[in-house]
Length: 263
Length: 216
Image 1: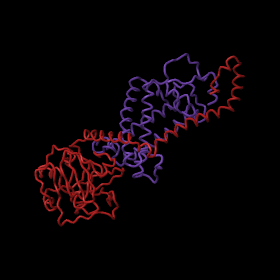
Image 2: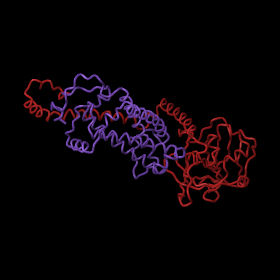
Image 3: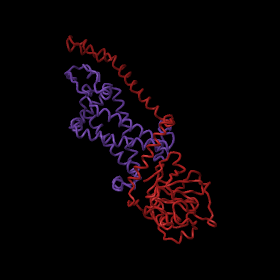
């Protein structure tokens, strides 16, 4: 950059040199500065190459991100405090209407009939008999008003009621030292959760919404409601559940959502 | 700016000072922070687009991750970099005394003077070692902003597990907005920061190899 090369001014009378230089530089400085500005701006252009999906499509990058996501599962398991309760709210704070959310539209909601419905239970449990809704309703029921947080960022407050999942797991003689509980749903959704969250006191096998039997759009006949996890971890229309030590992923988790999905 | 470049008194003759303008640890942590912030911001825009808080979305072409799931993976990877590298940056700045030396004293009068100078394009950047008052304030603000964005991010990520932090930030939904505006603050800083670096390119050189081309 020429304008920084001052030595030519060294032996000249100061005031005259300054006038001379100001005249010259006044004409020239704008250009190098602008050139420099453009040069720096080019690195901004370079940054923009990071955007879009190009870099995410690279197999190595995807594999690295997936490994970090597994690391994040472990980090969240460490952060998870089994005694830490999610905040609860009052009836007046319930979001109305509570938003419908699924991987399909509301016009495609699966309708499961109560007649003939049985919740299948398998895996590391002592009692594998299939449960009717009547049997589940006969167990102690709990209501809670909690915040549902979606992976997209929005949240809504709703009121769910049903059986404490820990009570249910103990009732069926589940091996609670197993790592996972998995779910299969009538809408072909599936997911799995860690045992500590399954045993959390606010984890409900929800049979009601806002005091009424769970309507189809909220997951009739039952939904696993966990205020300690993001929405996609809360399966609806549950048909079968299993206790296992084998990782079984989930509908969204297999596509890249974090498996632990804790809140 | 041209005035300061040629005025002999503006740049005191620097005796062969071989100390780097910025120590190596500072340059490393600065660039790692910059990388983390860029990844977090671009992926954050994609996450924002999944459920926009306001009546606009970010053009997908300038976001990172390809889709919500991909953006979340980038976001939750780069957060570790910002968290640990940011802590290191803060700790080394505090322990080495650099923070106190470089950013203080900061006075309203000095700030006003330098702000006027900056707006008239008369602010000296001749000595890259010395931050002017506007720079000091800008760097301190972005430092605080980064702390706010990390804390609000923690509330969004783990609102149940950090109840104290959640309540301090006014709950999940308010934390979301705080996180967004903290991002906007960092974006604004970045634009000004990059424009200033483009106008005074010696500062870029100083942040890369620790030395800057000599001024007259």
